[in-house]
Image 1 (cartoon, rainbow, N blue to C red):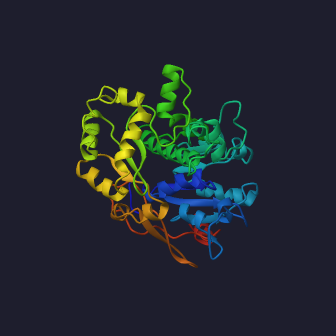
Image 2 (cartoon, one colour):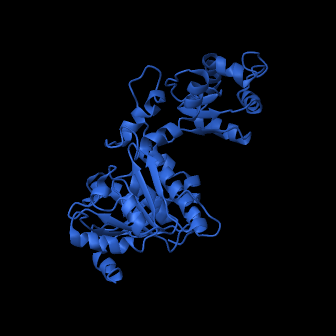
Image 3 (cartoon, rainbow, N blue to C red):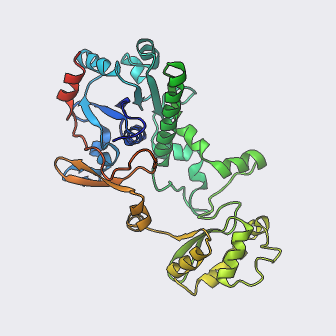
Length: 381
């Protein structure tokens, strides 16, 4: 891939999701990524479904465009190979439990002494410091401990996981941001740095309204379904056939909404004429709005609201979301090639840059240890 990170070499010592997602973004931005995998078994996610002809679609969706070599970093010969590759690298990304690479002789302090320009990024469950640093964590663990599950779901429902692995994905994004900031710093100082990202920290960082509410008001937020805690109307409303999302985030938009729904005088009613008053009367307002919405299907309401530029939309399933013409026009479904199964469709890169073409294809999907001979030959000297 051509991109702003072209000619940078990334060593990918990661597996499953948080690390591979980070290095996938770096690859999509032009970096060369060499994935170091455990001999015989490889990345754990090679065993995760769904499968196509015994190949993991989960793995393929995260590791397009990378090169694979299997190395055992406890083995002295493999350590030498790894060190040769590392000597030319710009970035190392790993998501082992803290202390693991130190035991193998490739911790930050040792590596920094030998390769002071290397940027070394670690993404882990709880980070490199603190009383929980040595504990393992998965996405759902940090969703729970980070407070996210406490504000997700319907009122009085059982604890509800967010529908994607947002604990892993947010950590991957923050790690990528940290790496890019470190690259810019290296241009000024000539030195690399250590980037330490905790999945749990990232969950705290994205709590936005919930954490603001607690820290400023000492209120502990609870699940509210689709409703926003302080903006109204800002939730999913029932229509004749389904639901429609309406996000009338200011008084002018609410006035437009009332006009579309033919709710005369509602926007001037003291219960609803400001966002603060609407937020205090959400239940009553929802009843009024849904009574009007019940006479037409979602698609018709969306058309009428879009004419007035009222933020709104249907609730799509995954098929509908992926096949949305807007998504197609933005090149958000792309292809990668696997030598056995052929073309494989996957999500594209949402970062569009004026200088670089957003290609419709990505690099090939690697089999385990596929690039051993090529890499050994290149890094033999």
